[in-house]
Every structure is written in structure tokens, then in C-alpha cells.
Length: 59
Image 1 (cartoon, one colour):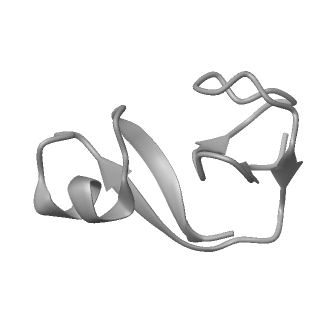
Image 2 (tube, one colour; image 1 turned 90 degrees about the vertical axis):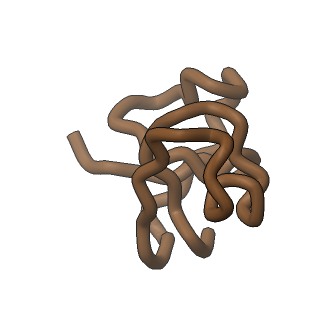
């Protein structure tokens, strides 16, 4: 299954529903990716990420 990004939270998922925000608004059109391990990091704070995972930089 292809990787797609959630339009709401930008999380990259392999499925038809985002596990974070429970929406099916996914797109295969995204640019770049960042993997967040620590939600207290500067990158996570700047991107507004509150859960560890892989996120698209631009959706």
C-alpha cells in the first residue's frame, strides 16, 4: 500500500484512515518528510507536532 499524508495533521500513514486524527482525508501529494521521536524537540514544536511518528513537511 502506498504512503499517504493526512491533510489535517500531516502524518504519513499506510492505510485509509489517519491513526492520530481519525480522518480519511489523505493525499499522496506531499513534499519531504520528518521523523519525530521527541515531541519536545525544536522541530516538533515549530511544526506543531504532538505525537511521535513520520510527518510530511508540505501537504
